[in-house]
Image (cartoon, rainbow, N blue to C red; front, side):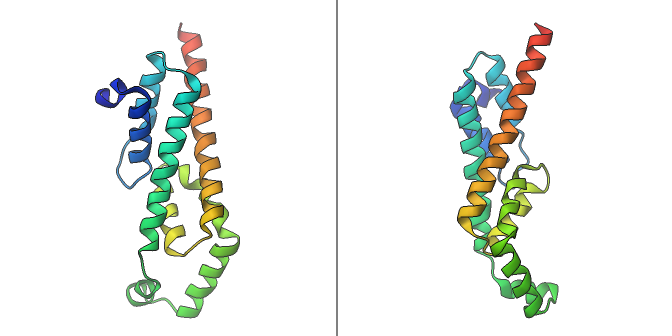
Length: 150
């Protein structure tokens, strides 16, 4: 983590990207370290959001490599049921991309949205919004705690 903190905004971007993939990684630690080292607010926000968004979209694209036939074969699900779920996800379910920021389940949501061929534009928009709000809240908390301590 210290290695990434020394790289400042680039370190934040890399940490946020890695945290949005299936790798267990905490971008908040690196972001906090860079912020406490005196980095500017908006470059941190942009680096974290962009890195995390691109990592999440990587999970989405990895999900698109999957085949619906795998669900039929390995999970023994009826094709008609799979088609109904896929149609729902392509219409209303694409907005669940907002929740990709959630720790633990977010990566799986992104992969599932790709696997079920959710609307990429709606997924991207909602995912970006969720990740931006997440980092905004985190950064505001860090600044508030820093004010109280100092």
